[in-house]
Length: 206
Image 1 (spheres, rainbow, N blue to C red):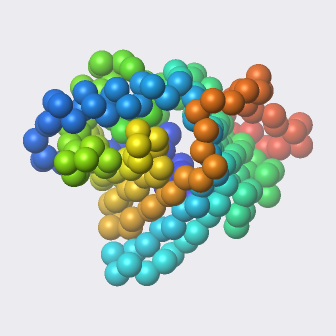
Image 2 (image 1 turned 90 degrees about the vertical axis):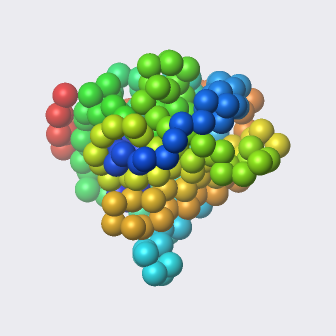
């Protein structure tokens, strides 16, 4: 699984010095709180500091409140990352290996938590500002912490989440655009359950 997707659930964030914008934070929270579930196809492009493409992936993402995520990569390699609210499962079918971690201990200061959380304590850890007057782009940075991702930008069109981007500590930018997105769909009961073959090697780090 590429470093960006892994960082969604596992990384802390490098602190920024931007000033808090309470109005922007309230607006973003309102936008996200209206998304109880979300499903979309995604295309990801990672570029270096010289804007050269270093990696591309495609797949599907499913989010649900509270604190649930399924991030499945189809190309160029198959990988599945599942967060069920308590446990994180990183499944590598090619290597026949799964890494299991405690979710609560891994997501401290991670701005991706805002996508599925209404907890004021979680929101208070981040600085949020609107990048434009149309409230179509929000930039999220942590107040404290160190980690791989330095900045998260969320993109909206007519109040719908259409994409996101990150800037990491290596000055690489990851841009993800969503397509065929939906916030109203039947959720399969096993969406956030890890189906692991007995032949897989399990690294349980909980």
